[in-house]
Amino acid sequence: MRLALLIFCLCIPNLAWSTEARLTLKNIIFDVEIAISHQERKQGLAGRKTLANNKGMLFIYSAPNIISFWMKDTLIPLDILFFDKNGRLLEIVHNAPPCKKNPCKKYTNKTPATFVLEITAGLAKKYSFAPGDIFTTILHP
Image (cartoon, rainbow, N blue to C red; front, side, top):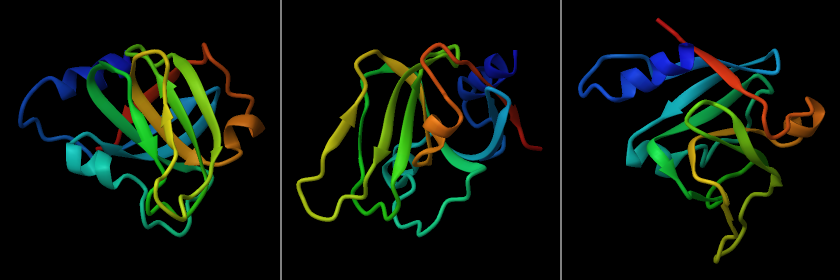
């Protein structure tokens, strides 16, 4: 239901809502920044020197897509988790390292995804996240 609310908010132009959310995956809570616009998604977590274990970034797309991520200008290794429109985990890229020189490697999902979550590298294995897991989210006020 909460995921449906998040999707509903995305479909209404100019709706004022938070750029942060609390996301739960297998009872693990992450406070995530939301990246919806092209510019927000392009910037991502680039330039960040640290990312706490309970933080992340949730990239949101208006329709399922094949999406490529790269680690250009990203300073910390990340796990990249791809989810379908219902918040079901489809694929995981474990420990994507920072890109130190061009060309940067691209990490692309095989199954169309609507949501992508970036978290600190190693957490997906630590918490045994696996395809089929489903996230829920609560928007911050």
